[in-house]
Length: 283
Image (cartoon, rainbow, N blue to C red):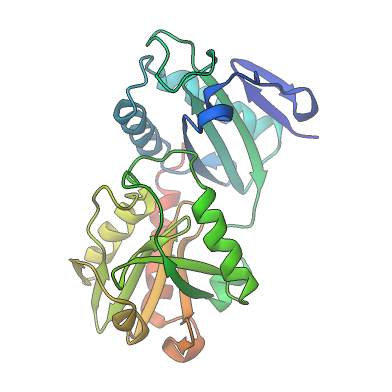
């Protein structure tokens, strides 16, 4: 049985409890981060903390986190649960308060929880075979740049994709692809990589930034612009990025096969380079 973290304590998952009046439970008033674990160590932890700070600031969370303490309990969770490869899920809620739409006082104590999951991040089926995608309308709110736990619509989109025999969905607005349910979307034409510019309508992924750095080192041209569903279906290659997917090939979009429905050569090169860069950030 796993050991989890709840407000400064390490407890068995069966004993973990959060108040019914917690704002995460009542309003989804919470933010989160998912940090990958490779070789028993945390990947790119500092950048995850920077994004967590930003999310909290955008939502006017009054209390600031102490990164050293967060690093310590992340490491301890990894150790206690013997995680060699997997993730640490971290959630920070505004805290416990009487139910009211207005935010409680800024000195309300945060609710901080975390747990681990064992996952095969490097050697897995999706990396070897690629994934299939359908496109759906993007019906989310307009602050997708904040990593909140408001994930019901992405869950609906992912479930719809699986019902149709696909692995995931890319959400679209006015015919343009925004992002996946939990990942950023990319296409390749020749040696040019296209990804949507980061604004309030998508989450700027930690892995997204790493891939941009890696791609430039490999002499790829990066263009930040919207691309249409049709442009994606006509791409030479396509892929997604996220903390757990790293770079994962997309081999089919709707009914269109991409790169002969096999992981593309350029995508595989990017994945290998991205993983090597991730290994250099272990903490």
